[in-house]
Length: 224
Ligand code: DX5
Ligand code: ZN
Figure: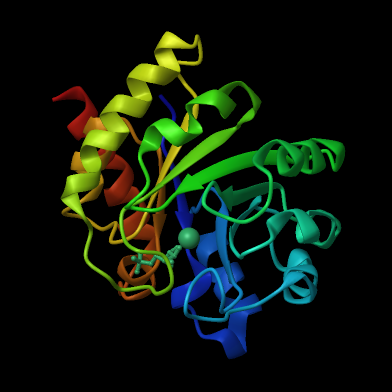
């Protein structure tokens, strides 16, 4: 299993995003997690495709775009053209899941499907063969800096088993929300391999050392 760290720029200084991208790239991040919120699907507003386009030149790392928006289908082309590499949307959104996957595939991008804490993870099972990644939210989406919900670990275990059952044992399983030094191990042991971290990474004095520590903690927990 390959572990990857996707720092969330939700915790960066929005006036200096290109500097944040340079910083996390130099720190050894594997991708960049970009949280898109529309004020409807979640009670917060962040940024849209024009900002993603402006940031595209600041790093060569893949853009891992997390759409917390009511109608993702309507915006897939915008984010694809802006430079998203992986586009994750919510199974709870108003858009038809299959049609949205069609749009992501037509744009030549990788698809991710996300579940909020209150949604059974089984909701994504019918779509697994079309996905590059499943995102299991470990906080209620909308804000950074919340506490990790350990009651979500059972979803990771069930999902990893279902991926194996469907012949995709190494499918990316992403966790997002409250990931830090004390929570990355349990998440990895339960089956996650792509770790979003916002406040913990941007609040650390040495992001490079922290990313290396996170990866070591994930690997050790999985082997234990
Ligand atoms: C929450 C976002 C997360 C958030 C994570 O709605 O989807 O990506 O930035 O931040 P931390 O790591 O601080 O919980
Ligand atoms: Zn996110």
